[in-house]
Length: 468
Image (cartoon, rainbow, N blue to C red; front, side):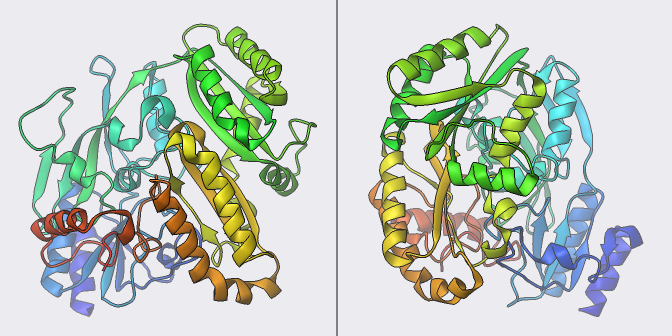
């Protein structure tokens, strides 16, 4: 592969070819669960360079694995080890090309971070709504590739709902320019949606037209202690009734997670009242939200749905509450045993969330009784992030012995509840061997037909998404 590396250097220049030793961290995923290998790590600076890289890899028989901010949770942007691969990171392609307030859209390069896009939209009194904890490093390309969700899906939808057009380099190096800012277009198949959620297996998204929303002038959040898990959906329904056009986020946060975040970051608890779970709710509008928020909390307490609550009174308090929510991921607060643990990104119909949580806890208690099981997530989307982690080095080996049984039983429970194993993190590698039972065979056949049509030689991100 020496000739390929020399050819790639000629395409991207010295600045675009990263030394393998310097880029070693890019070959391991965020969770530390997968480590791959690459013959080269390239950092193209333009769509033309991306196309040349892909053509060079095709000619040399090498695979192309595209990576954004390397913040994924499913190993989808990590090369495998069973095929020569070139890792292509698009972080040099981070331009905000235009922000069109009158069109309510913006055109950006795939390597732009979510934070940069949000800031550019805010500068013209608009809002790019998708948002999650890794906003400062996650990129637009990666978000499109996984159909990322986050905290604001309840009101604004997943990434899929916020992409108006894309530019894509195909597996043969041709470029499709689908950068259209049309709100309505019924002129055939919606090809852009094929690439949203495809995890780089059908083409490489290099630029995108993103949808903008009105900026909200007033927003405020509250953390409420949930009386018990059985009251969760009643509390959510009450929020939709009390402030139907204002609720942008409704998040479940466990007590164990709050304790751990406060310990790791050396901060005080935002609420002294103890409960197994809390709900973090945010209202946002162009009208004042303090009164409807406090009225909602008062009604919830009167109905016995919550036992206490704290309302953010300053921007600093608002930021602190959301920092606690953002840090709930085990990659931030339980790093030592994250890799061997079971991470779930599941979604079920809204009315089954409490049942899902109870069933996962019961299965974990039976199969791995010494493990820590906790859950947090997006209540309004039915998306629960459950974690089952070994506690203590002496428990890891026993946990790994029982993990296949744990996975199989939890997956079966999710399927029985009409759910999905991948709500917003993608399939990647972590779910590839587990997700086949979620869909009928004909659905996988259609997906394989699409893959074969776009990438017949399996050049783009092989070993991901589609089950064997």
